[in-house]
Length: 275
Image (cartoon, rainbow, N blue to C red; front, side, top):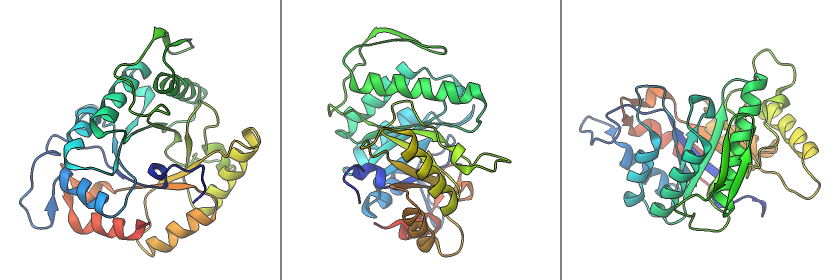
């Protein structure tokens, strides 16, 4: 592990967007609720449990993340937010600092988009810059193309001066592209950037990220995606060897039916990711 990589970034598990039954205790065979998933991930040494923002009709991950503060003590609690869905960066920063306070400094936030139209790229970069500034600076004034904040100080303040970790990027490989490296967002003042795909795509993104940032800045690259059915541990090793500093394994939707997680599926993914 390189010194630039915060331990929360190294290994993460992202849950699919959750429905209304996510917080309830399950009694079916091999069926567990969200708090049990969080404890399993913590005991497995996972750095961050990521909760994804759901489409309309799903549960808001912000209060759900707060509910996990009391049943965990070490694992980071991360939120995956899409700026295009309308949540203002100032609201994201406020909610994440609340989670940071509840967890004693274990909060993280990922700002991601699926599309790569110029509008998506510019909005994502601007939202990332504002969230990062609000989490690390005392007073922020920014008048951008999409968002504006004036003399704003986020309350409560983060537990640590560095603020919660901020990750940014695109969540799927670019369609019909001959240049997988284009899938990475460079800029936006993030602590780490997201890549997808397999080892060749990761290596291409690593090269582009290194070439687009100032010498000596040690930019952090985090792979995000689903594990293949066969040889997941070997796949994880190949992603790190290709240049990723960390990874976020996305739990398949089939593992969570209306919030009832399948213990066997969760444990197989955790075993493959064990640090």
